Amino acid sequence: MKKNLLLLLSLITINLSAQDCSDLFISEYVEGPGNNNAVEIYNPTSNDVNLDGYTINRYGNGSQTPSETWSLSGSISSGDAISIGNGQLDSVYVNNTYWSLPVDPVFYSSCDYHCSGVYPTPFYFNGDDAITLEKAGNIIDIFGKVGEDPGSAWTDDATAGYTDANGGSWITRYNTLVRKADIKNGITMNPFVFNPTAEYDTIGYANYTNLGSHSCDCITTDIENKSSSYLIYPNPASKGNTIYINSKNSIKSIALYNSIGQNILETENINFDTSNLNSGSYIIKIKLINGTVLENKIVIK
Image (cartoon, rainbow, N blue to C red):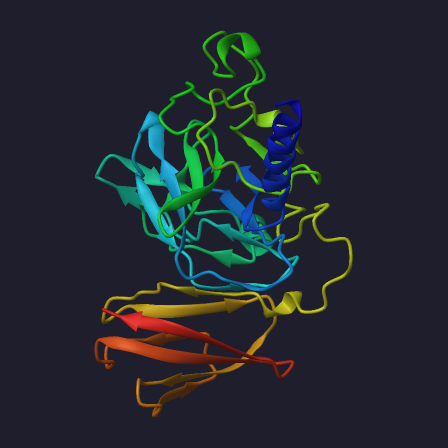
């Protein structure tokens, strides 16, 4: 019986260890002044990861279901981190009630990529919103606690379950949090309580210096192909949308092919209009200035 128990415990330990460095996770969280909000995603695996099927989701004010979802498309190179920030560049009058202010230029230039600046997106989060990274609808990482409204933010106060019920110091509002280097995977089960400092270091208000890179014990050697990370947005796209392509490396040209291999578009721009495209699937080839060619499927609805 004792041997069987030891064997069972060994198998459980092996299974837990096997999960380390196996999928993407959230590596940085920025909740800055105004709409200066960003989420960084890290690839701890030994392979490039195609982003199709991955989403970033906001669960606002204690909601049990996503308030907004943003679909990712593109690829993250092994050992690379990509930062995605709110892309609002102009003031917007929301619901005839208040002005939503643009992000500041320093923040904007610090992010690798930007979501649509059209309200709402998950990047309009506040310190009391849970954020998830999901793959095919399954949660692979959680920041915060889904279904809990902590007040203004999650805090350092264990006596209040890390909510601000007893006036604890805010951690997830007006702060930048970076995942600790010894964290090797995401949180897949909604936590009983969310202690922000258990897995994150705080580096202060409006601190954007770490965006786009991450130190993790999963990968200890230099990876030479980090410049191959890129994002496509939106994908899928509705007919008439403008599709944007962003890469850490400069893009030389973009080519689009239909389902029978015909080249229907060539451009040196990093975006293109879909008004003249038929609904269906296309292959996009992105040629970088260093000669690398990246390939992905896009869908026009």
